[in-house]
Image (cartoon, rainbow, N blue to C red):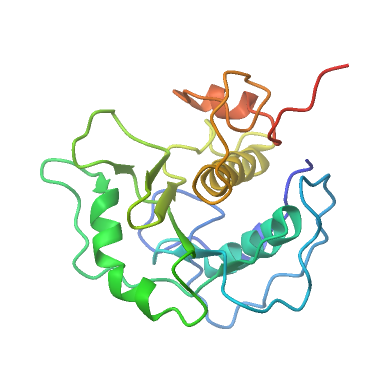
Length: 233
């Protein structure tokens, strides 16, 4: 799959943010909308209809540190690839969301807890809709069994959160760094949909999108973009 283009040069850095992530929420309300891009990719599923009806399959909900424009573009691109209705929303308010004591990390469970009302009020959701929260915050579980997590899933509330905090290349402005960040983030978002919506099982093949366990950025970079993996010739 080719790298997805999301017109990242139009997105301004969030005030006070220490990263130049293309996913941060732009501050200028007058910024022009990103130019639509055509996704060219082999798909496991037939393209979704342009005119979508019925309940949304997956809502992408950016927190207030993540770009609404990028969330909307990811939704359009993944709708085409998966044949599902994947829809981005406006940014969710996070007043009262605090890091865990003695840490700069946010508990994924706290994000889900705060989002309960938001999920209930989204107009095109039903009992099968899945919700993926997108953030630049560093996340972990409350139990903190790992140093950090790229993503976290909860089948009970039908929720996932994907964090770009640990996906940035080093150095930040390295050649191809933005494309590398995009690739990593998209792969982890696709894995969430595959596992939690489509019921894909995890794989021991590093060329498979569903390879597990993912323990480092190197693992993400070596993942394939498809499930099952495309056999090597």
